[in-house]
Every structure is written in structure tokens, then in C-alpha cells.
Length: 119
Image (cartoon, rainbow, N blue to C red; front, side, top):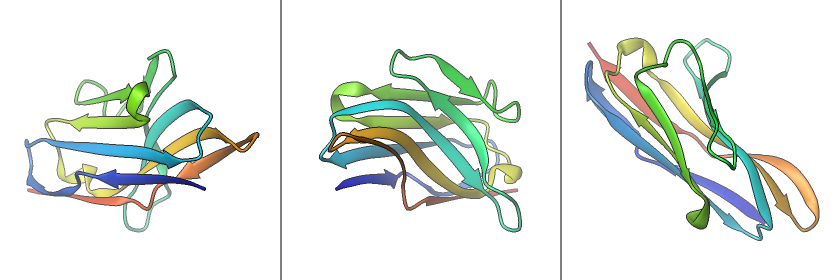
């Protein structure tokens, strides 16, 4: 069984920073892309950033220049450094990863971590 566990969310003032972490654990043979999504109240879940095994990254326009995604393949962990946070960044942030486990490729989601940015 595979689990993604996020940590690092919280309450921060506008202009502040937070760092999210997401660790994958369990019976893992390989991990492809890892990423972060977010869902604000009353809105659809949206892509924030993704990173490939080789380190290529992709960002939503709304976070370019402020957020940085990275990963530690040895630890099966992906990070999201969030700087210059804005109230509109307030959302539940979800980790996402495509993982090979027991000969099956599947997409897994974490349970989500709340990020609240006050003005």
C-alpha cells in the first residue's frame, strides 16, 4: 500500500513564506512525475506545479516566480517552497504522484494540507 503524507501548511501573513513537504511511503518500485495541486473554497482543484524524475518543472502562471518545486528522489519526497504569499493562495494543497507499486502504475493523492494567507 502506498501513502502520500503532506506537511508544512499553516497560517501566514501576506508576503510571508511556507514550505510544504510530501513523502511517499509503502511498496514503491518507481515514481514518475510528482506535483502539487490546490483547491480553494467553491473552486475546482487546480495545478500548482509539477516536477519530473529528471527535475524538469512546470508552474501555473499565478505562482511563477514565487513558488519553487523540488524533489529528493532518494527520500521519495517532493517540496513546494512558497514565497511572497498572497491571500488568493489560500487553499487546501494536495500532493500528487504517479507511482509504480506491485507492478501497477497508479496516481496517488495526499490527504491535503491547509494553507491560509491573511491580508
